Amino acid sequence: TVAFGNTVNAATVGQQALTVSNNATFANTVGATTALRELSVGGTTGLNGTAVVTSNAGGGTGNQTYTGAVTLGSANGTTVALTYTGGTVAFGNTVNAATVGQQALTMSNNATFANTVGATTALRELSVSGTTAINTTSIVTSNAGGGTGNQTYTGAVTLGTGNGTTVALTNTG
Image (cartoon, rainbow, N blue to C red):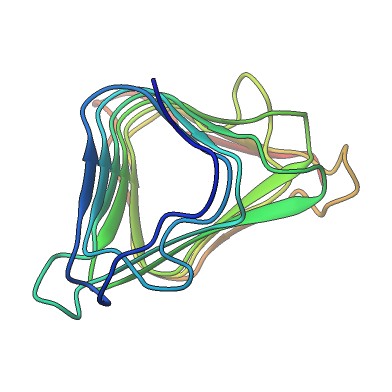
């Protein structure tokens, strides 16, 4: 596991990318001061800060790719904001909160979900400002931690699960 104990920033906005081939944990913000070009994690990811920022300003994609399972480990009652210009956030595996109804996730642009979200540990809230590809069977949010439990999809939503399957969007708020 590659563990980042403090902030991670690019030297110039949108010019430097970060690829971690296996597991990674981020204890603080990523790109919040100076946005990264792209971020890719090949294994599991612990997002324990409140922001990850990428940008296509330097000619990159601005994409964020999380291949393994993602856990939102920020403090109770907080939101992890994934902000990216010109890109897509792609989750290749599960996404869960650390504590039921305590961690929220917002995305500033397009997102794809290849596996369940909140099925093991429900998120406080989920918001996608761009298009959303839901290629899974379940997204669960909860107001158990004092949040709303809301799910907000501002752009077009495409259900990409297999034929004859149902996508269950569960909001206990």
